Image (cartoon, rainbow over all chains, first blue to last red; front, side, top):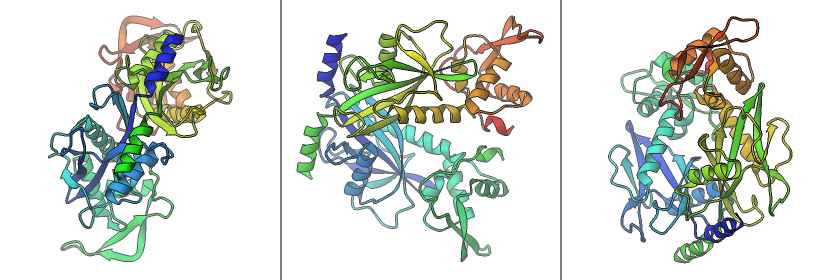
Length: 232
Length: 232
């Protein structure tokens, strides 16, 4: 037992600890994922999730490391971020036994290209290195599932949006149409939205629709529903 | 940028990677947690979550490490186990910057004491070392929340149980009474239970109640509901 403990203390030093971020946005009813081209081995030149080593000297925790990666590599200051899961083992990284703490980040549709990286439709991704394909699959399942009962999709919207626009975001994530009356009731129940006084947006041939925003103080957390949206 | 990468490669070697397990059972309408007395510094003598270093030579991933800890330290072969979250940072472990991948494990009420460790009611826990108090709080929130819409509580039951017994488990986790008719409907909807042919159990003055078990092949996964149980 003692020998085993000592061995583990020594071998603990050889572990690799990284963070990876599944950064998502939604444009024209298409969920998109940001990929960065790797500069170094392993997999130099491959398109992969943004990520990197944890820096113990500067990171307060793994979330802090993920935010640093998004800030330094992509110039993103404070996207919505939540921990997804850890992925680990001897084979996922050719450099050795590794643990990656993976995060999901959501941003509104970017107004222009990011300094680095490419947005790719999540259903037309290239082969990804490491176990990034598995991380992406886990992230998409989480986001789609959580969209059924929470305000998570709000983080894919800009500062102001109409209810039909928001409904389209939910529908894209859930992959099926939602009854508009039921949708409005669910948004009321969530309690995270408020109308912007006097602000409307014309939407095709219809009369201008009221613009909404997240309530002050509700920018980061999630509202949760007691029932999934489609069951209403 | 290059300097930063090199620094991180060096410093990655000084990270500590551990697993911790929140092992829960439920007895007499009381959720209980297993604590082990620590043999070594830091916090020698303190009661803490079962856990330990990842062993890269033998563990296939962090879940494998958690199962090894439960097997070696507690003699538990294959409890229900799910990843909870990672907890990390410079201050949570006095030995240095650390990442702990935490798991929740559920077991039926043990028939006897474990070789090591003590079961403690979750609402009467001692002060715990490291950030184990935070890990426990996160685990309890996860288990209580997930009980509202899944078959998770089944893993706290033995191989055979009556519906009233199972309902009592759900009620303890959710902290409120459930309508029995609604509860039966939800269990039907989950589809994870089947009656044991000819098996009944007497329950006080009532007529003997049908015994149920998990369906073959449904021992590990979770059934999920579209609505939380109490909303029915």
